[in-house]
Image 1 (cartoon, rainbow, N blue to C red):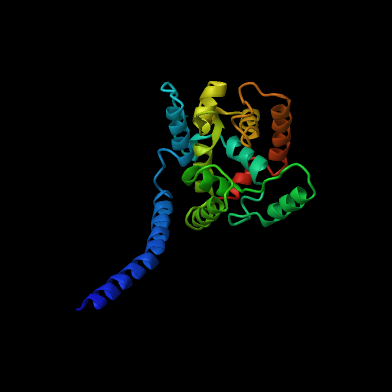
Image 2: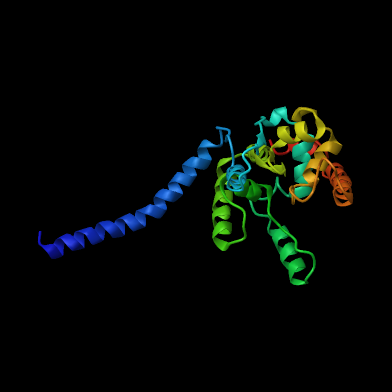
Length: 241
């Protein structure tokens, strides 16, 4: 083969490599999410980012607080409170709540308070695999992981992972760590009011405190308790099985 043929051959191999690389990445993400249907993740991307942030700031004493608990070891009131607070259509949508998205778009277009429409599935994808931010690239990757999660995991697994990786305070991740830190009890012993208070801080867990709830968190806690009853209480979770 002459020099020209060798160059053409290398060029074809390069093109094939460039075409196969995205397919390989997609396949790896499918395998990653499929494995996590049964294997409990020891940490999340958000946990890793927070620990790195502490190291960069020279805070050698900072420690994450996190301990995995299976869903049956968590008071049913907490996943119920999260659904009531964050995503009341969780059992009906397939990862994206189009009705909530349209309401958020209309509210934001009117110049009202900024309104989000992320589902529990989207938040699980973001917390577990991604980084904070609002870039279109991150949102696109989040959407892909959301599709995978909804396709490969049952709804109860999504809830289980979410309540174990959600941040309930600076460095406090998951239901059990939050229950121990703020109420001195196991996640299985959380009351409905305590679960509602934890759910109330989820929009901004470093701004709002479950330990010392201000007027906003108190109002939101009461509203979540009302919504928990309105959607059918613990019986609502049985419909997700």
